[in-house]
Length: 418
Ligand SMILES: Nc1nc2c(ncn2[C@@H]2O[C@H](COP(=O)(O)OP(=O)(O)OP(=O)(O)O)[C@@H](O)[C@H]2O)c(=O)[nH]1
Ligand SMILES: [Mg+2]
Image (cartoon, rainbow, N blue to C red; front, side):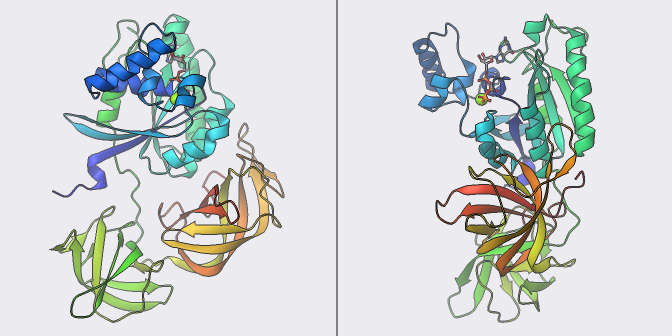
């Protein structure tokens, strides 16, 4: 059986440090019985060792020693869960500002943001930053767990004031669906089951909301895109081209254009996992046989209309995670886009976003964790779409040539709210 991305909901937890993201995921996994006994035993043993009487549910995802000692999440932890109606891939992201880059990685493949906000402290700058990055990365729906309701005596007023704040921001950032739920991750209220403590709330629990939310919401009306990952030589001559489909589905007989070469041909055959198929849907790994001989190689792209842009120069939104500032004359950078990698220069920096006010201010450099706009010039031509049209061909990362560290997440074009 072929698993497509549609069957699975990918979600990422986001929100400020200590607001309870890992505890919420731990609670969700425990209450839906996703853990084996030995995993639960290990969490219990680690909790006892750290002098915590009960289970520390955050230890379900916080597995690193440093994470347990400091009580914070550092790296993204991926967990798989399934209920009778749904499968989930959960990315539990760190809230600490120092690890914003890791959060961006976790959110980059998510269909939905599970936003966790401590009801007692309200929306913090880091929560706003996370929401901003998630929006930039194309996440369009969110579920908001207004957490630690037990610390405010289950006050509906406290809940509502967080909801008001987040709804305003959500509208500004272009999220299409926002659902807020009053929860206690620690005690389990409105997580996998309802709660007697919130008689004023008659909406779904977090689990019910996740089960009924849409997956694969990132659909675009653009043409088909196949960034070529491998060229496979066939027995008896000929080549086929393998990669992951994005944008729209391809069909046998489709007229396609190989880019950047600009050569037009048709798809003679499509193979999925060794089986001949009539089409290849978005998100599947496919292997194309083309009617004409081409010189296509890794990093080239097979596309249907409307075609992407072939360019060396473009404007992009940059989430800068480097330690040193992002400047025009700065470090040597390499740009990785789909299956291609090329040296890149920063031609100009246009401005920076003020996370608090969402205003766009003049700037000639970006500090760590800043989000701004820049014009880039690459050595090799790239085949790009605007990020809003295609999440795969519209995104890239910047690598420091010397340290090999990923120093930025980038999106081609600028977000609608900039
Ligand atoms: N009273 C109360 N405490 C909670 C609740 N949820 C989480 N906590 C506590 O809040 C603290 C932080 O919880 P974590 O789950 O580690 O928070 P986090 O958001 O994952 O933190 P980072 O991953 O480091 O950003 C822990 O001490 C939890 O026990 C809740 O619903 N009520
Ligand atoms: Mg955590």
